[in-house]
Image 1: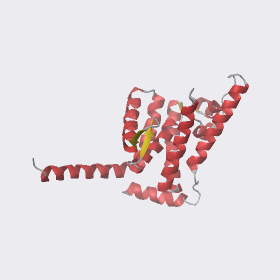
Image 2: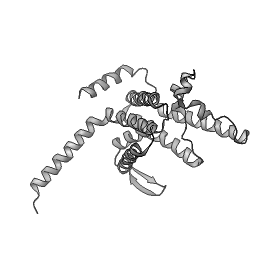
Image 3: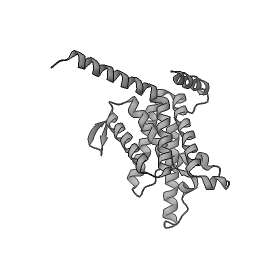
Image 4: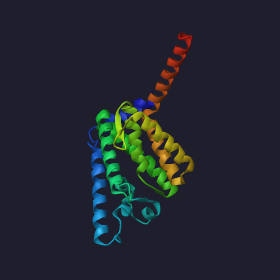
Length: 223
């Protein structure tokens, strides 16, 4: 409860300076970086320097003076040989970020993303390299907690409730934490801790209510 009060007070303090439509801006910035990289690749037969690589978090490069990477890593797009996958991922970030900000308001969403950035940076400085994938996936965890009954079309034609995708994502993150690299583990831990910071109290209450409902049904329904 004290933690929720702390977040509420912090939210009020930054309300006037909070950035509206933050995730939309970040998603558009990623799209611009992707477009620039695509143009450079075709202009130089695939030999061009990647803008994505110049923006990515790299502890060694930061210590050499490339301090912009401390912030610019949030604009790195999800690199893939599949053009459709990259565009869908950017749209996914845009869509979930917009929904979460609309539910919370800009100040609380700014806090969520800022704390996620701070956690990711700490992890990055510990392990040396880190990306923004798990930071952005933490937004979907928030989305699934807020809108569990919302249906999306998996593979464009299979209707699935968001809560099941969120559970699947949680299981996948656990698996990647066990089997992944130290950079993956650090980024996943930062993302999960950020999610629990904002949703841990509600999750504990949901578990308590579910357990109480189970006990009530057990005591009142005899077969």
